[in-house]
Image 1 (cartoon, one colour):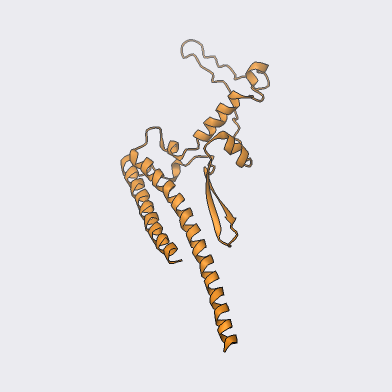
Image 2 (image 1 turned 30 degrees about the vertical axis):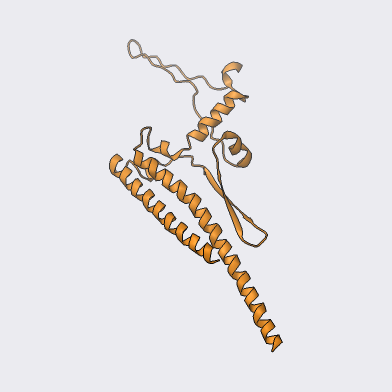
Length: 199
């Protein structure tokens, strides 16, 4: 229990340093990109969690936590079938207009009028995998702030990712220490009871 308390103290200090470094890097990127360049206004319209923490109870009563990162399309569709699929609404083809001469606008063709080859009813196989991969890649929070983001913003993201892993380890240690403390108090109560019965 004492060794776990020492490890917990070290990991808490490391977690605090990672969080401080993350916020400092975030403030550096806000200074570089402008106050409105890094704010909640740039959040994605369709936000989906890329990290989930699952908890399970072990035999001794302590909790075990595991970080699950969604990185591939197979993992996303297998582990998280509840995520909504974003549908594109509107014309599929862009209409080009001629600026010279008489103004003529073409009406976009509706999906019902498209030939069978262009309608893409189900997009089997490789095409569907590419579309899913693009959807997962578009969920990267760095892409919300532009294509060429400063290095400080990437450092902030890495700091918070490492901090999440460390937070899970801290939670496991706290659960283990609490379980050990309960076992110690139970054994101490049994010892006191035996001493009273022996007298």
